[in-house]
Length: 137
Image 1 (tube, one colour):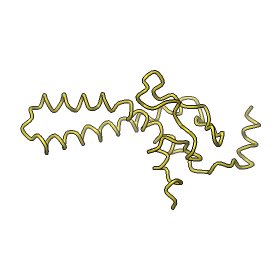
Image 2 (cartoon, rainbow, N blue to C red; image 1 turned 180 degrees about the horizontal axis):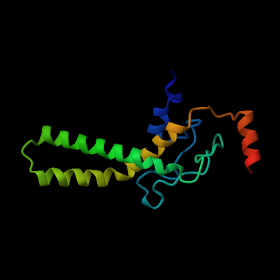
Image 3 (cartoon, rainbow, N blue to C red; image 1 turned 45 degrees about the vertical axis):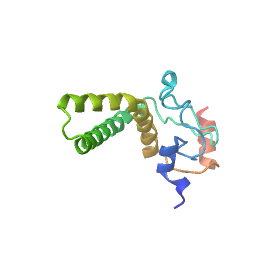
Image 4 (tube, rainbow, N blue to C red; image 1 turned 135 degrees about the vertical axis):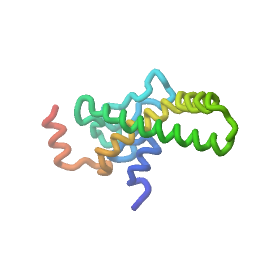
């Protein structure tokens, strides 16, 4: 399978889950004024990013899993690299790490959630998609 057609490509590059070419987010994750803001549709393939109101609430579960994985990874790294660190130092380090990685984890959770439900279709829209788009307007 070609790398560009994989879901991981879309997640890593924050691109459209349908065509893997257009931008998914309005800005980068650390632009806190627009953190997590999505385009309504892809600028390249013109497919919508939201299939229903509240669709991205499910990304909270992905964000939780990513935060737990991040915390466990930091804890294990600290246990290996600084085994004599106190519990308070470990807790503070993990908390600061989560705060710094928070916007990135939030963006990753949204793009991952979208890629769970939207699959690669290429740039060209099918006849059914064009009919549904004109019917819905």
